[in-house]
Length: 251
Ligand code: NAP
Image (cartoon, rainbow, N blue to C red; front, side):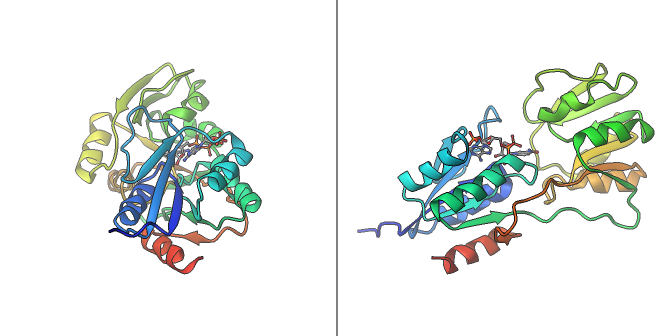
């Protein structure tokens, strides 16, 4: 007879790290694991274990869900730019008393040959963009595309998993693709579209880093959007391994 799980981990997901963590935990009979997804992607790659899709209805909804489902640990493994959810998780943990960890991959750092300009937000990036180039590889996601819609003299290649909705720039080509991406593909993409500036969030991680290497090699500047603030005092792990260690040592 197999033993009942002694812990129920809720992973707030939407990232590669969230999926890797669910894979590791679902192989351990001590853990029941539920991954929560926002439901933004039409056909998400579902992790092993249980999944639930859609918002919780704010802080109180999240706190109530964790209590009702006997959650013992919450791991905020949302994307570094999913600002609202990280704050919701923090406030919900304060209400429920359930231990919370943030699993956040480290950001990228420029190398000497890089030509990076930093922006504080997508709107700031849109302001800075015309000074940097006119043929843009935009990788900041379809949700913020409207921020660039007023740039009528700029040509955009926008890569995203699902097609954009809402206002878009007039000169736009959409490339639907899901990472990881290889360096040779990124080199070819920049050359084929005669890209002269890359726009990216400081997402970190290896799955989408080759675009930065390709830009460096081609002498193309990158406009890098800085990460939003994170809630104070939430313990943080920079890797799936570190999150597993936290789980094993946090009652
Ligand atoms: P957000 O602004 O932080 O969150 C907005 C609302 O979406 C939250 O208040 C919550 O609704 C719901 N939500 C977000 N993440 C959720 C999750 N994992 N499970 C259930 N509900 C969730 O988030 P976002 O920037 O729109 O990102 C949405 C999701 O896409 C995140 O899970 C994130 O990991 C993933 N993602 C985001 C980016 C990005 O650049 N922002 C990039 C790649 C992947 P309620 O208040 O109703 O609970």
